[in-house]
Length: 121
Image (cartoon, rainbow, N blue to C red; front, side, top):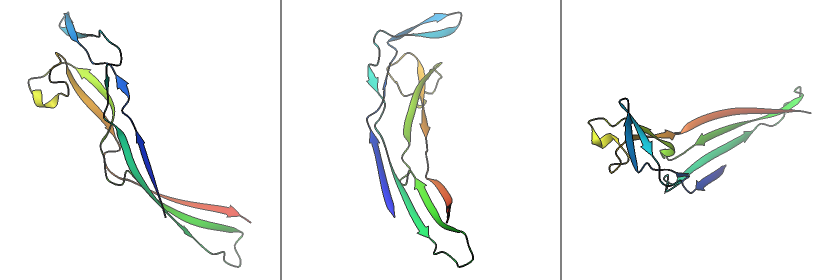
């Protein structure tokens, strides 16, 4: 049985300082580049390997590996996108920004994997 913990700081990204309207579309204005960071990324993975003993008439040895990625179901932010502001202010990340926004997360729940490995003798 093994555990693997992955941690990294949040990636830098640029927050819009303002916007201008061009034919009904809000275009963001960026005064600084990479002026903010995403939330830190971390997850815990679990792996468990079960080995089989070789049977007499087989020409291979095999084992099963059971894996769970993101064991504690952390919602890691992958990227932040801008969108047109809607009437619901609670949906947006940047409350002080003139533009709306949303976050894209990856692996919101645990991901299960089952692997069978075999090696010929």
